[in-house]
Structures are given as structure tokens and as C-alpha cells.
Length: 162
Image 1 (spheres, rainbow, N blue to C red):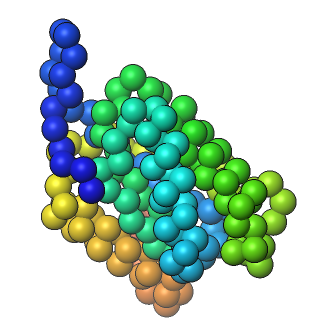
Image 2: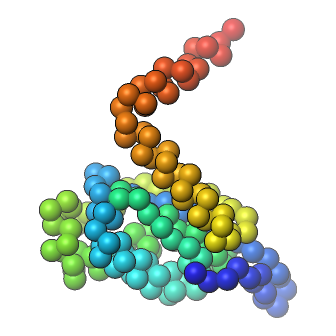
């Protein structure tokens, strides 16, 4: 993990951090295999390095990956997502198809969408807190009884009508 730092140019000083979450096609649990996780991280770091974007932190659940990125201000979020998803997909399918063939097929590695949020300073503790907290949310959602109970306690849109 790289240390946060302010980015200085001839006329600016600042910090631009981004949280990007991407999901494999069909929400398959490809990252349950540690080798797949490590290879995707290596390729993602390579793609980001070509764009001069810092990979501040990364972690994943079995079916999604989180990236905390710094110094991305000279790139658009769609361009970053496309570069990471495109390069990692290409490299995994070209060089490591045997690791993913039972879960993914064709030219697809990632789902079409992504989640993003610009964020403030990212520290090791804040990343650990976020990932642990977000993972609990994902695991709870997999428990249908819990999900059904949570959903029934939520206010419905019609509840807000007058």
C-alpha cells in the first residue's frame, strides 16, 4: 500500500481519491481462489500504473473487488473503470483461462457496471474498517431469512405519499 500524499504540480496542490468496486460477470465467486485474486490485482496495478494512478489499497470478497485509488484527477472515472476492467479481463482470459473457465466463459470477465465514490484521505485503518463493514453487509444479504426480515422493515415508497 502506498502512503497518501498531496499531489503537487506547478500550479496546484491537492488530493483526489476514488473508491471503485467492480464485480465479475454473473457475480461469480472467482476471488474465492487466491491465485485469481492476486493475478487480477497485479494486472490492475499495471493498468493503473500506465495511467499514473496510485493503487492505495485493494481488497475483495469472493464476488467483487474494491480499489482505493489516488492521483486520478487527470482521468475520468469511466476511463479508469474501462482500463482496469478491460486489461484485467484480457490478461486473465489470455493467460489464465484455466483458472476461471468453470465460472466464466466467452470474452466476459466483469459485469457491465461498477460502483464509484470519491473519498477523502484513505488510511490503512479506514480501508480495514470499510472492507470489514461492507463484507458483513454482503454476507448478511446472502442469508435469505435476514434479507426478508430487513426488507419487510424498510419503509415503502408509498409510505412517503401524502
